[in-house]
Image 1 (cartoon, rainbow, N blue to C red):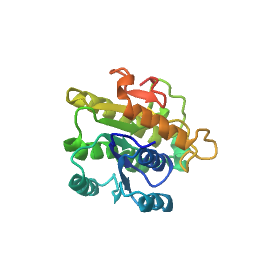
Image 2 (image 1 turned 180 degrees about the vertical axis):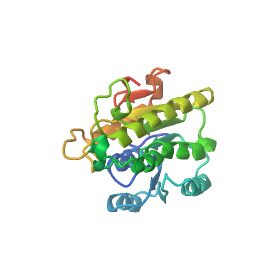
Image 3 (image 1 turned 90 degrees about the vertical axis):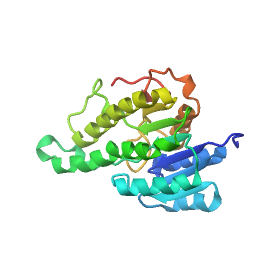
Image 4 (image 1 turned 90 degrees about the horizontal axis):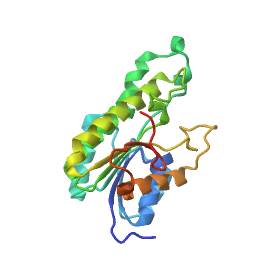
Length: 235
């Protein structure tokens, strides 16, 4: 169903998986969507061909210059941003190795994308955010210190924990402007990153995340780190 009041929505990591489904969901609502990708894909290009309200832009969020350039281009199209999904992230199967076999030089590259990348995008989008805007940073239960059960995955878990902390600080920094920040574990999604053991439907979880960003008032003001249903997770 088309929305009577279209939102302006930015999705990073939008070429596939959860990002693509977030784009699809908001287009179906009638929203104006900007999809940021390192490289596009056939499914996203099909949406672009069918949807004049979709902007597809190239931006590697590990590169500040590229993020700034994409932001400057977006500012030529939009006067404000209602919803920001910081969805872009990476996972490497090699991260499953124990410490003795872990390539610690890979930690920094995963940090640059999974943790710092979201802040790069938020930093450049601040001028477009307003009272009522929502930032949703896609994290993971892997970033929780309170329920850590892992014996490996150092880079991924540490990068998500860093994203959680950055999101908490950001939420406090923009609170007086009326901007909400959420950091969300969407589940174990049936995507390329999720792998063969994933159990959760990506389109269904995208719809759940959209419910969070479209109805932030339904979630208590002090609740930031949550699951796809808005329930709190332990930091």
